[in-house]
Length: 231
Ligand code: C5P
Image (cartoon, rainbow, N blue to C red):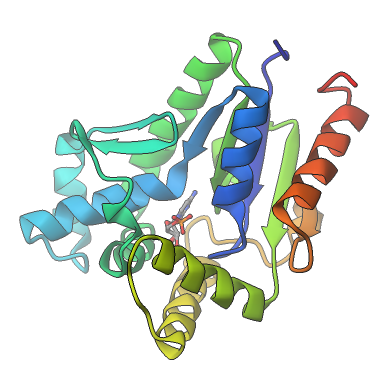
């Protein structure tokens, strides 16, 4: 078993974070913390209860009723598997709205830190992806990756992801959706996505022209170079 350490993977919408994080989790028998799934779950709970996503006070009020578990790559909301449901467009949009609220961020970041600590206490490598993992959730992560890709590649990946979930989307609709979510993620007051990740100690990895396997190989090499994995 590898010794416990953590890997932060931040980056914009559809840069490939989830795919890379899931693959790394399998290889390292680690714990995958899909933090975006938690913001999506809060949005889903509000949508189901008819709570306006524009109303921070109301959204904050439901947080004690929202129990989220991240288990075996699945997102469990109040005991139900919502992994596929939260990939839909309403929760994608809603997640970046609720993620702007201080109350929501403070609550979820605390949960994310606790989950990571528990996994590391059990000797598991933690692989967490999101927007503020390397800055807020796991500021001491042994490896911080800022995963990015060109706009065209991200659009294709997002189209492919919807297709995989049986959702047919128009290309223009995807372009608009990514643009809006990026705008919110980069420009919000709290924990915005970094526009200068290298300055914050991230290793910036543009995987536009790489296969998943090539990106994973580069990360494994980096972990070996840092002495976190054996040859
Ligand atoms: O990663 P994913 O696209 O599923 O995340 C959904 C949304 O949740 C993001 O667009 C972002 O607004 C928010 N998020 C965040 N901080 C994180 C993870 C996700 O603000 N650590």
